[in-house]
Image (tube, helix red, strand yellow):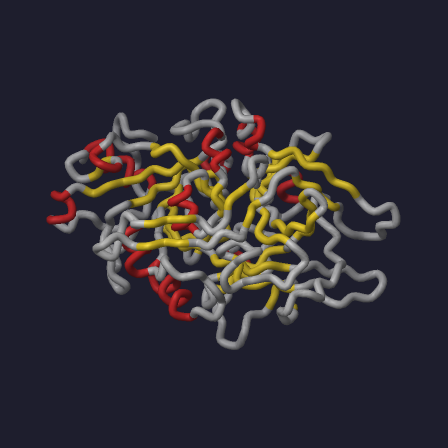
Length: 419
């Protein structure tokens, strides 16, 4: 089992222990929790809709002798994905094509006297969480941002995608914190910008097992017309990493392949982002980067105590991107095309679309692709460029869905659409 020695009590972490009911952590009084039958990432202990967080097992590793903490969200192997209760993403097997470093080779060791517990993974690269995240809106208060500096930067050898030496299986294992605590979950000097709490392992007696967990701020979006939840951990673009509160990892720019989606050798899936959709905290058509900057408190550090930020995101102020293939779609072809590494497709609405208020919220991949194929007078790439990949990726593991499971796209593709 890939993971870490989780029997350690993290005494340096000044966070209370969670209560456990029926294998799932109970939220605070009044918190709304996502039902387990709507959680896709089965290793999640809790998806708290009130706090906008997902609670995941936290694994201890090392980087050049120093402690790092990571989560595991996907595997390229069907059986091992199910063994670890994580998402199956066969496309991860292609990530090293043309970019050997896009998959970090790690080693794993276990103490000789280990009775029951996880191995220790030694990483060759890790993020630096010490930079201060800076996002300054444009002069008009929206997008594009005047300044965008990510709060975390990966080292030259860091990739969240790992392969244990001696194995061919690839895992998505983003590092979300470094050091032995206490952990800064306010300004994030040793944690990812979406880490809102680090919860120590419970006190145990001989013959028992407990593991630490981490609460991560999730992102709200859409797939096949349905509301979904995912986390954002890395991006190969510095501005996107800033907006996403993710780690900037330029190495991932070389991952297989830009614009490839479901073609031979691709390790990517598509995510659809709008640069200039409508804004407004109570606007049901609000969506995209301009909306996030204006209505989602994007300039602030995220913390559990910032209820204004949490409430804004929960009530529609998030990016509300639309994603492609979902890991539980009824059609196995689409389910097996899922990858957490999303190839960004930026849509820019024309003046005609904006003036006519046709820049409405889009919630389905095929609807967007049909618009791009048939209405270039309304929707193009940035600056009027042809619609398609803008060249960078975002690591966004799927967590779950809010109402109905995304099954099939709302419409069929028109002839010659990019589908």
